[in-house]
Amino acid sequence: MKDLPKKTTRRLRCAIYTRKSSEEGLEQEFNSLHAQREACEAYIASQRSEGWALVRDQYDDGGISGGTLERPALKQLLADIEDGLVDVVVVYKIDRLSRALMDFSTLVEVFDRNGVTFVSVTQSFNTTTSMGRLTLNILLSFAQFEREVTAERIRDKVKASRMKGMWMGGNIPLGYDVCDRKLLVNTEEAARVCMVFERFVEVGSATVLARELRSDGFRNKKGKPIDKGYLYRLLNNRVYLGEAVHKGTAYPGEHNAIIDTRLWEQVHDIMGESPRKRANNSRTQTPALLKGLLFSATGSAMTPSSTKKGTRQYRYYVSMDLLKNRETPDDGIPRRLPADTAEAAVITEIRRLLRTPETTAKVIAALDREDIPEADAIDALQQFPQLWEQLFPGEQARIVQLLVRRVTVTAEGLIIDLRTDSIAGVMREMMTPRKLEATE
Image (cartoon, rainbow, N blue to C red; front, side, top):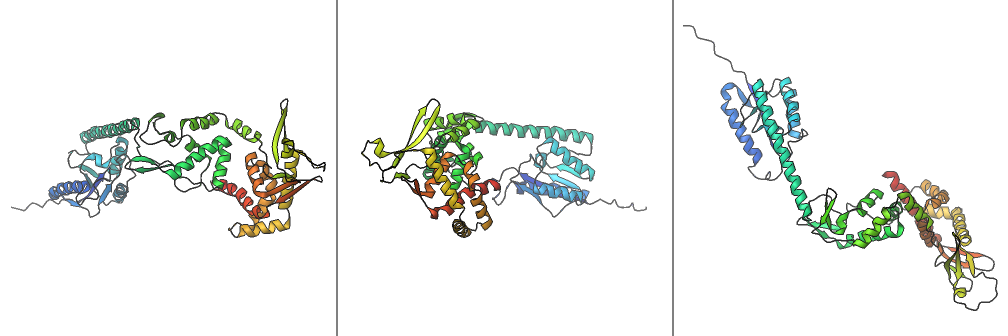
C-alpha cells in the first residue's frame, strides 16, 4: 500500500499584546502584564500542532488607557503587521486591545488587510466569520459601556469629594502647598497673593498691574514671569476664599482661606466694570507727580491741593507756610503754583537730560554690563517721549520719584535736581515689559 503524503502545517507567527490602564503594581516582580503574557503563551503552546509559534518581540503597554490608539507598543505591533511579520495577534481579553468600538473597527481593518487573525484567550471567536464579527461587536459594545460607566463613576466621585471641600489634584495654586492630598497655606506665597489683590484695588487695571509685577520680578508657582491672563485667573480663583469649585459651583473647602470676603468683593466690583471704563478711570486719576519733591526757596514743603469750579478741577502745589498762615517775606517766591505748569517743566527737563550725549553714554555703559545691546539702549532713550505717553499716571509718578531728587521754587523759576545715576535703571525698567510682551 502506497504511503499517503504527510500534511504540511503552515507556521503562524503569533504576537502577544498586553496592556494595563494604571501604573499601580507595575513595579512588582509579577504584575498584571506578566499574568496576561503567561496565559497567552500557554494558549499558543496548546496550538503548537497547528503551527503556532511565538515571536520574540514583546508588545506591552503599562499604565496606558485603552481609550486611545496612541500607545507605543500597539503602534509598534501595527507597524510589524504592515511589514508582514505577524500572522496572529493574541490577547488575554479583547478590551486589552481597545475599549472603544470605533478604534477596534480600525484595528480589525488593519488585521483584515494584512491577513492577520485576532484571538482572545478568554473569549473564543474567529474574526474571519460573520458570526465571529457579530460576537466581537457585542463584546466591544459591553467593553465600551463598562468604560463609560467607570468614567461616570470617577466623575461622580470627584463631584462628591469637591462637595466635601477636598482637594482633587491639578495645578497647585500660588499661596498653597499640598501635603497628604490637602492644601496647606504657604505663608510667603500667601503674602504675595494678598499683595496682588490689594494692589489691584489700588490700580484698577490688570494690564497696569501685570506690567508692574513683571518689572518687580513677580513669578508664578512654576517660576515663570506672569502675564495679564495669569493675573485674571489668580483674581478669579475662589480657592483663595477657602472654597472648592466643581463645574462652576463653589463648596466650603477643607483648606484655609487667604483672601477675606471684603477684599474679594472689592476686586470683583472693579472687575465687573467694562475694561474700557476701568482704563479710563485709571487714566483720569491724576496723581501729584511732584509730591514730596517740591519745596520753596525758604525750605518750606509745597503740598498738592485742588479746587473745583463747576465740573472742572484745578490742581495746585501750595506752600505749607501759606496753609499754616505763617509770616513770609515779600521775596517774590510764589506760595501757590499751578500743578500742570510745575510738572510740565520737570518732565521737559527730564526729556532734555535724556537727549544729552553724556546721558546716552552713561546709559549705554550701564546697560551693556547687563548684556543689553547698545542699539536697544539708544532706541529706548529716543522713544522715551512716546513711552511716557503710554504710561498710566501712577507709573509716571513712580518714575518721577526715581529720577527727581528735589525741585526748588525760586522767584526766577524752578531749580530741578535730577538723579542721573537712576536713569539707566529706569530705562531698563521701561524696556523690560516690551521685551516680555514680544516673547509671549
